[in-house]
Length: 169
Image 1 (cartoon, rainbow, N blue to C red):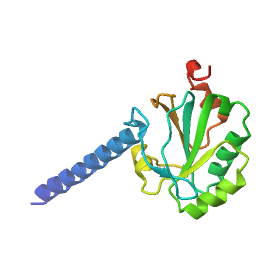
Image 2 (cartoon, helix red, strand yellow):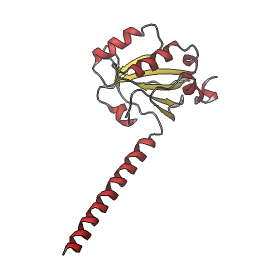
Image 3 (tube, rainbow, N blue to C red):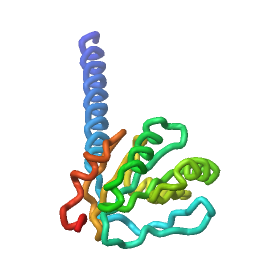
Image 4 (cartoon, one colour):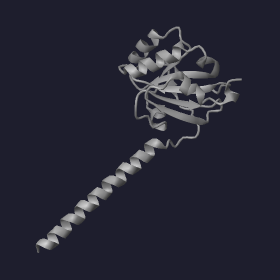
């Protein structure tokens, strides 16, 4: 009788361990493999609550998701706004899912920058890009094809190194 109980408990524990491993592996795979090929045409909002769609451009597109209380996010935005060459190669959009009041506050700190600040009110872009960490930067070609995701603080030189040469002409 004790042997049967031992076998059943061992089988249950083994099953639980296998299920946990399966869950960990599948969630890691989903996170590491962004399933987006092109930048979707999603309605975002300016700090004045005006609907905004990221337009097609002759430049690459960089989207940075940020939170207003994240120091790394603010450092990322600051280094992008201070870069002299980034705006020749790409248009930068900083997007948040926070209320518009937070967006206005951050935007006011970077009013001389060429960065466009937007709110993803319904989290459509946030969900489409599977944002998990802040800051998260996403690089797209001028024809909206996905190039690379940068998780955490990424230096401007690292981001621009992935912009194809035809985007910089």
